[in-house]
Amino acid sequence: MSTKLTIGLFGFGVVGQGLNDIIRTKDLNLEIKKIAIKNPEKRRTLPEELFTTDSSIILNDPEINTVVELINDADAAYYIVKTALQKGKNVVSANKKMIAEHLEELLHLQEQYGTSLLYEGAVCGSIPIIRNLEEYYDNELLYSIRGIFNGSSNYILSKTFNDNLDYPTALKQAQDLGFAESNPILDVGGFDAKSKLVIAVSHAYGVLTNPDDVFNMGIQNISPKDIQYAKEKNFKIKLVPTALEFGERQVVLYVIPRMIKPDDFLFNVENEYNGVIVQAAFADQQFFFGKGAGGHPTGSAVLSDIAALRYDYKYEYKKYRLNNAYVQSNDYVLTIYLRYTDDSILNKLDIKEVTERFYSPDFSYVIGKVTLKNLMIHAEELDNADTFIAEIGSGSQQ
Ligand SMILES: NC(=O)C1=CN([C@@H]2O[C@H](COP(=O)(O)OP(=O)(O)OC[C@H]3O[C@@H](n4cnc5c(N)ncnc54)[C@H](OP(=O)(O)O)[C@@H]3O)[C@@H](O)[C@H]2O)C=CC1
Ligand SMILES: N[C@@H](CC=O)C(=O)O
Image (cartoon, rainbow, N blue to C red):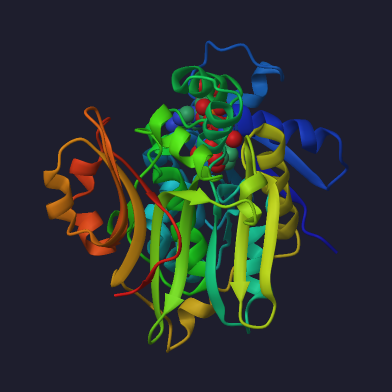
């Protein structure tokens, strides 16, 4: 017999309303008792008495056994989720930034208070990747996970690459469609993809890492020159988070644009769609594909978590609890395409094994090898309009 869920919902924006639309089409032995929002003046599509701006009304209601957190403020979300877990309520959240930043503490809170926090909607929208990494690949060695984890940046890349739209127009469209974060640098700068990678890696390898210790470079400095280079070589450019196991139980993780060949599963992942390639020892390559952003796709993943709570589902964090869990390492070498104007960056990055160079009065590029550690040291200098960096080909252990 499933538990009746009495829900306190936080947030009634793109995802909150998407979830509500889906719930209304089902008969699921659940009730949304109250909805917390921020702005009391906004017109709502549900009766006024359902809404409150006072989060404590939900958090202190003993009848509410489930909190669904779908707000666009990571700090407020942290307080809400932590308090709900401490008060014995189960929680579903789609807030990847908050979860990635506080995962270790949230894991221990669940243990301490016997509560459950589920967050499938936080990673790649509608794609059921977290439960697969946690449960399905429990016994198998995972060589790597990589993919397209951010719908907005992929939408922008598709529109600029395939339809010759300019970058600001494509970004505005992603915002208008409800895909982008309130601060879009989180999307285009690779921060959102990094949060999702950090969460995925905790279930894939049992590694809990601080997002600040993971390198991310985004697509914010892409120019028509980079697109022209990619087209001439029959590549597409995608923003790709990667986690790879190597050496003695080490895992490297980073987010960087990547030149993708036509035979790669990610080549045809366009617009707000996401794709995840899992490379495992025996299963070999497996590809997960689906919408990574938007109210209904994300709402469907949130609803799947809510439904799982009716049967007391919890993440066990099995791989984290193993004694011989993996450790994060940055001893890794990437083959990169680097567009630049100031030659000094070449020395700073100490680029080796150069296979291609191009000079012109207004820009140059080089293809060569660089250590992940050097990219991390010079990350701030690399983030300027005259520079664009993308992985090209495969990397190797340092
Ligand atoms: N949009 C997407 O495609 C996806 C989003 N997510 C994540 O889901 C979450 C919600 O995103 P999204 O729906 O797009 O965001 P929106 O900006 O569309 O909506 C945010 C909602 O949060 C409410 N809110 C903000 N602060 C508070 C607060 N302190 N207390 C109560 N309510 C608050 C807002 O209230 P008000 O209505 O009054 O302004 C609004 O209803 C974010 O964490 C996002 O990263 C995850 C996957 C996909
Ligand atoms: N801003 C995010 C929303 C979903 O997580 C994205 O574009 O992927």
